[in-house]
Length: 206
Image (cartoon, rainbow, N blue to C red; front, side):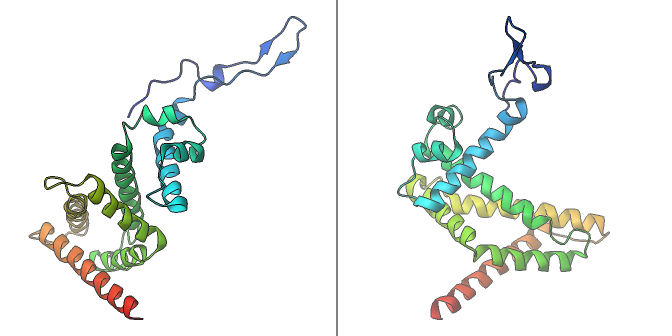
């Protein structure tokens, strides 16, 4: 979402002066453009904190507003309701996690890079944040999912596209001939899901 810039940049503001010549504090006006652009992410992070601290059943915009130190009306100007908010939060955390993973192994041979990333993905999936992310996906499917809308399937399809692009680009940079990046991405992702399932079985058994 692109917000209009504030009418006056911080550098152009000057303290007001009363008749006696003393300077008085300038009232805070509209947020700067940078602050306005960061606000949606700040609201989403506050929502993540609410889910972490209070659970999904206790999730409310009142709590999000308190965590973000804003008015509840500010949330509604950017998110029409709970569904839109949680969908945006799911996308926000997915992209954030993907960018962190894809920074690993940059410049290494493609096989080594994707081995490092695979290990990182498994660690994330078994972390407290990873488990909460899984709960968020399940919650969205339970509350808003339909026969036409399945959040987990959509995330899987989106991950395949992203991984395919990363493999294709890595192969191009390293002058490797790769016939079917999408197939390679599918094998890589399916392998991760199998490893996760097996590790969950072992963890549950222990």
